[in-house]
Length: 514
Image (cartoon, rainbow, N blue to C red; front, side, top):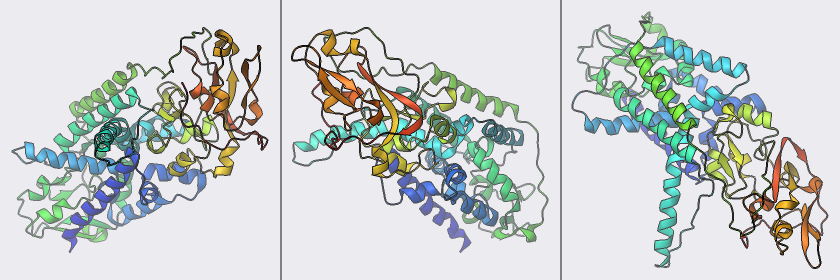
């Protein structure tokens, strides 16, 4: 019966992987909140804010009970590594795995460095190393653009057959997110193809932390010397490379609970038993594997430096014959609704990209330099290609870390994430003395409205106290090369005044005339 734990692991793991993959592709499912609730780092961060997301506590309890099952049953990055390793088996003639000594200096050092960085006020280590967020970056940055492209092209083809598929479009495409997704996937493929769960047991801070906890696990996999023939079948399927056939011992710190060994052994030499029965002292070889460490660090540094030199995509602008000369300089980046403040957001967001994928208007875009190095790939409001829907709260509903706290629609309507600013000298009405008014037409609160200018011409005027910073005006503005109207982010989100009923326009902007 214990041998069937492997098949239970596969079923649960595929369920989590499918739900999260669909979510990062932009497709929401009823199981989405449950899938993110059980992700260790997001749950921990949200618990520290709201004291309600206790998924990580359940993971810790399970680890105390049976070991690092999170790594094989729930973690999407771990499951992806298993799939890569499984595919790699078809390209190999020799056995895939064999016992390897633990790189304790490296894995413990990364965990300590991550904890120290958190206490120093930087979340960069988790942004780069959290397994859930890494999977989100790979799927959103690399797979989602391909998914959208296939969907939209298929929509056009099937339209001729009177079969209609809603085109998605992708206004928030980020080249740096694509490159970073490729880098992460390449590193993961190299690790998984060669050494199975090498990343989980040398770099991942979650894996190391759960490995420490697993030393106190109640039920552990035990090797029975009297039954063992040292055939090596169990070691050859151990993706953690933690079964030492010669010593007939298992390094349970590195065991990810895949249970492959239980099904591989034909001699019943492996059993899941209470740890008090085992009572075996683990011997750990702390000899440095310098070449392995240098190899990994070289890949990591190359990825960071390589992506750092990639230029960001230029902001999408509308064509216009009327040029202007005053550049827009924003002092503060506009953070998403529910983020409370710039400080709160950058201290709790792990850049998993879930809100970017789920945003229906695609106004959220991965950052490059908007938040500085510590905010690498964290989402920001990019009004160059879209706007924030007046009645939408999706991003606040799906955020798993508490970086975005839930909002009701009524709260969202008066939440001021930024303030409108108008540069008269850039406006088409001023530069070419022609009618426009696109910004005023699409402002949902009438914070931008038209006033008399010259003759029959009217020019925009702004009322910041009722502006919510949705960016519809900035998106609609056809002025080039610089916008005549833009949103300046609020470092701390404020409460906007309610517009007069006669001014309010509840319809979200759709198509623009420019």
